Figure: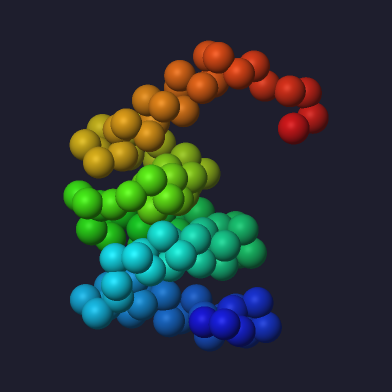
Length: 109
């Protein structure tokens, strides 16, 4: 996956296997989630595809980075409302709502 920007199609084809691998260390899950968002969401505009892969990941013991990547993918896929009912993701959606109330949006950002 080190060549994901040079050969994105190959990397995208490997994502489902990578993310479903039982041998993938828990410490690597946030980076793998970032890669899904980067390749599918940012590069291809396929946020639904990124979210489909991420929501299949085990989230019960997920740390903040992995959950944040999931929230980004769900939101940009247009599935934030449904994802906000997920017990593992709910605190992240709540935190986003609290921040939005405290930190007004800046024009042009």
